[in-house]
Amino acid sequence: TDCSPYQHWQSYLVYFSAMKIHQPGHITRIASGCEGEDKAAMEKWFQEHIQGMSSRFHLHMTPHFSGVQNEKGETIGDYKFFNKPFGLKHWMEHSDHFSLQQIDDIVILIDPDMILTRPIIGDFSNDVDTLIAKIRQPHILGRRVEHGLPFAQTYGFGAQWERLDLDAIAGPESPAKLVDKMTGRLHYAVGPPYLATVQDMYQIAIKWSEFVPLVHKQYPNLLAEMFAFSIAAAHLELKHQIIDSLMVSDAEINGGEGWPLVDKIPNEKTCSFAKNYAGDNEYVLPSVLHMCQRYSVGNDWFFGKRRFPKDFFQCDHPLLEEPPDNLATAFNFKKPPNAPEPTELTPKFVNRESFMICYLTAVANEAATFFKRQACKSGSINLKKSLKMVQLFDNYKNGSQEEENN
Image 1 (cartoon, rainbow, N blue to C red):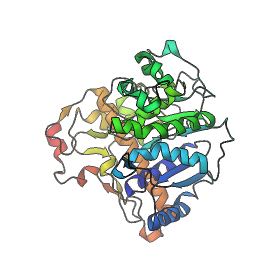
Image 2 (cartoon, rainbow, N blue to C red; image 1 turned 120 degrees about the horizontal axis):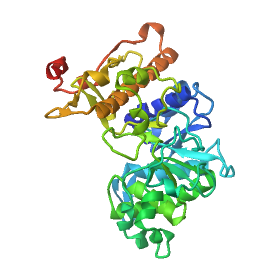
Image 3 (cartoon, rainbow, N blue to C red; image 1 turned 90 degrees about the vertical axis):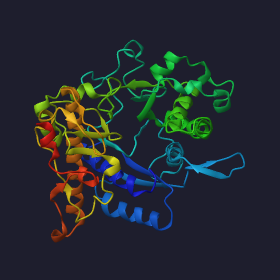
Image 4 (tube, one colour; image 1 turned 30 degrees about the horizontal axis):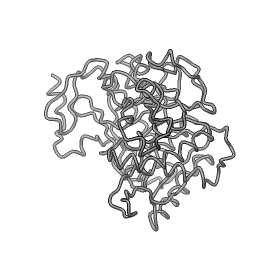
């Protein structure tokens, strides 16, 4: 993460979800670029509000890495995603609770906007909760993370990184140049969650950090750091076993994510199940919910991380109003705030949108309630579920959902 309030509340949700689902191992927030009063405030917050969750939870502070430099070493821009490879490498080299000598341990790297729903471990041998795309099933490399076999979530960019000048990035003799499009798609179209042994992840971190400025120079766009990861892995000849079910994010996607697990939940049960999920086995969920999209049902029900109140974890801040249990059957359309017209939804896609809204709303409220009961005086706690996220938009008109649904 960086040091912004925007990623601060997300990180609290990661810690809370890890505590809730009993994620094994150590959980570390790698925060880059925090200085002076901001650094002191973050360390104080961690000690007061995170450390009590578990002695296995940690905070690792790193220098600022996001500056874009020219050939003269002058800073000419900012690319915040440099923090990911450089922050990972810094943590692996300077952590106070971890050693590079623990080569057999597994490192799992996720983004701050990923909510854990069940423990992530290095074993993917259970076909009930592990989804692998049909195109990859004849090419399965293994079912467990081990040296030489990292795992990761499917991402849909294929082998686009092969279009870059790999000579300039990885050198003319790099094995990355020998990767054909099919191999790139089968084993290197990856994103977080990433899983690898310490030995492999450190080698990736070194090359990822080396390559990412060169990739960004050619491709100064959002996916530059992800392309750099793929090139680093290909350069090291570390083919990944790619899994679909580590994540869901885009409710409208037709493949490549863990949505088939969610699709098994009947629409009439979806919202109630999501709001009350406690790790039971009635329906298996993807490992993380990546809240990188906007989710909407009807006119009034919405969840979007960029509109989430940055001061949500405060004693007097209201909780979110929770959707009705019949959300996935009450509407057949969505009209997100600022959308000019409603969009019709099939039952499958209204079910997915409802699942994300109901789960994310409920876990945010649960985390805020936990925070308040730990940190606030009894008379100052606001547990009223009275805030709809759509109310944070200027053009919201309360009650319009019933008019359009009739």
